[in-house]
Length: 115
Length: 419
Image 1 (tube, rainbow over the protein chains, first blue to last red):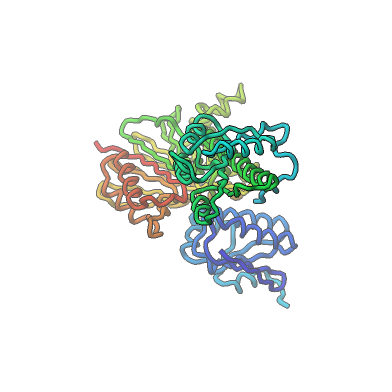
Image 2 (image 1 turned 90 degrees about the vertical axis):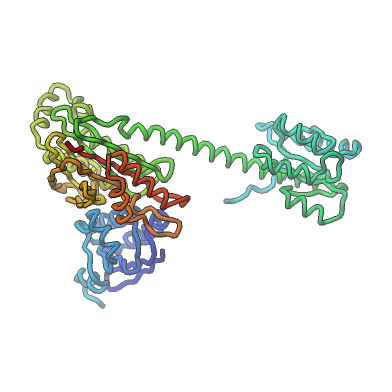
């Protein structure tokens, strides 16, 4: 799994590629927690490159969305592939997380002015 | 990991007995000189005349280090090294080769056979001291690591045995219903669980298959909690939880006895969800759980699927239908309202509930077992609950071969027999 972070206005987009599982979930958690701790609470997780996520990955999303909302922000997903979306839907994560078609849609949904 | 530096102080510390060293040489004069030198460094010394003699002594009592000559009668140095390497008890005993042979090939051969170091026969005491001390330090570190690993293994064995106690010892019996289940942990302990119990009041059989997120010890701790919350809230009388409240227990019992299975299931799901989300929210643990309630005589089957892999209803003709989620996984957020659905489990039909470790199990080529193979295996063994379980597990094991399991696998089948 690889990650990279991109800033647009107040929104941090974390691009993720590869498998999110028990081996890699901690690394993803550190990246997302790092954003929250740096005061960036409006987060987009770009799942366009994620071909698999285990429940360990879902746990990272749960921790992050709770952390972001408790600070007045949110975590939103973008570009989720059908097989991963199926996992999110089955487990009910789509009922607690907003999912957008594209990163642009997700970033714009925060309504911040891009400068 | 950092290796400790070779100590520059005394070779042994007062809180430790001196290391036990075996000097192996066929020349008495060499043995004596070397033994005295080693003794002078503060170690205990014994001697052997050749490899065979050494092997007997090494097997008779524990040693910490061997100083080994190369050329000897009966069994020479390389032969002893080979014998040690093939002996599980002695394979890790450090050996320093002491050789007059200036043939570098022999020394290399000994090192390849597992010797940790070598010394020329005309050594300086300081060199002997440094080499022995380094070899003994490595051995102590190794021994400590092994003891640590052994104690972790023992702890996990204890955890595994205790965890088995969180699975039902036996299943409820009801006329016209067969129940079977199996659980294979990927590691010593599991985040999967299943349960089946009859409600004393109505005879309704509650069936549970759950999968706590992530794996290992953390998931195993939460498995015990989820299972207990579900069991105790579904059946407070037998589960014992609300009996503790004392004088009010009959009121609680009455209110539950009059509840419909659907009410009961949604209440159990809501209670468990809120308990985890509120009291354990910081850990961000959750579980996907399939909860069912089967009324044996009518076949009425109520269920709440909390974010879990769809359960399968299998008909005698092999057709299947899925019981998909009716709500999110338990523990994500508090105050979720769970919805129950109802079907009739007709005679001859089976309910098959399982965890994703089954359909996501990988074969040697890296592909997943998948739901099609599962359905084919079910159709091919559709004669009884135990035949279904055995058939699916047999097909799964044939598919995965020796591939290491990456997730726990759990399977529960309830068959309503014909007639």
